[in-house]
Amino acid sequence: MTETLVAQRADLQSPTLFFGLSSSNTLRPDLFEHFALHALDGAGTNRRVTTLADIVPCHVSQISALLRGGELRVDVALIQVRRLPEGGLTLGVIADFTQAMIRAARVVIALVNPSLPITDGDALVDGNDIDVFVESDDRLIDMPVTVALSQPHATTLM
Image (cartoon, rainbow, N blue to C red; front, side):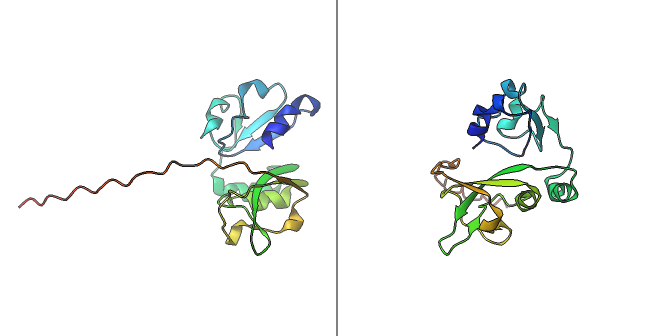
């Protein structure tokens, strides 16, 4: 979805993008002629654009309150969800401030990604809160499978 947004950048009226941890290659310094950027942090692939972005100086736990209070405005929220076998949707492991973002947004666009892990609790989303569903089969970032190393035996000194 971010790639589609970036592809349409010349047709947009200088939107502001707020982003947290990103592993996407879509945020690049050459986009600043079309976007204002606000970043939660400079981790992941955000590192290459944080010198050009305004960093929101707060802990991630404060973002929900800033969204509810209107200090951070959201017109369009781009999120990922997975359909649950028994019905309903989950956000997977990204449930930090996403619920507050969904409630604050004028429009919510959800990428349906069957690779998200199934989680419940704060990660459950009501399908009525989503305005547009985009189907996808993109994989999440896969962590390589590691081989467990045998534990060295402890040596007792007497």
